[in-house]
Image (cartoon, rainbow over all chains, first blue to last red; front, side, top):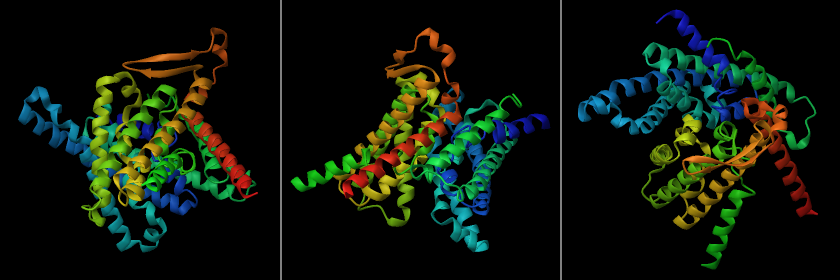
Length: 207
Length: 217
């Protein structure tokens, strides 16, 4: 596997098919934790870590556990027989990874831990993470472990990029005169729409 | 008993109107944005999510005396994951085309915060009747919100309206040939989703503020 292909995967998932702005994954934290730049960036880093580790571990579970055991029990032509366990296995991996990050932050970065509040355990239900694991499982280009790791890491970087840009814009919106009905979620979604429009300019790179 | 029924009905109606998961609570936004590029996808997604929320509320409510508080989130997630797997298999078996279009968003129902929120807020504390009423209300409210977005986006973006009909889709409405150049393709692309939802949420806020004002006066 050439390094060029890996860079292609990375740019593809971080910019062209940005998780948030083109793939609609992780909208809840994108709207919820994007009020301040430093918090948004911290959230992005936490998500990037969880995404990378979960992407690798779920790849290992599918290719190292479910497929071999399935083919051992039901014969090689039915290697996918245990794949119905995928979703349950994925969500268990993600939940335990989030637990790990939570313990780590509470011990070493207490201010960040209190700032995140309820959004930290909610990373478990962040669809960006489960979504990336599912895409890694579906796409042909991530059939090797290294590609899967690069894909997951790129997804996390793309998420961090989107949420940080959003937070930067929202810090300015606070001082502008938004119609009452559109304050809060309304204007945030409209801004996200314009951002998505900007990101669609990346379409055509790679591929 | 009559009072019980009344409150169940209210719980049901609240999920659709005052407490709509998408337009008011802003929960479970990912599928709302992703699958509403056609009415067909929106309705199938709504039906799948309704099935999952009903079953998860039912099971959680039945088990509510057995679930220990510190493992409840794990139990919720596993319950939801089980029913999502069932829904995913059923869609793949009976509506393969639509399930291909929905892609990863069917398994992503597992992490839809709307469903886990209903288990946490209602089903763990209330009886089966009330939990089911709540689940149906929330599920239908979710489907209605998806359908609103689906109609707007499909009509403006591709000039058609399609309904799910067994294994294939049924075209309800199609703009005539001359309108082809007037299609607003951005509406079926990601930016259109954000813009449409932003406008719809704004309109909903306006209507709610108006109604509150009217009620107070």
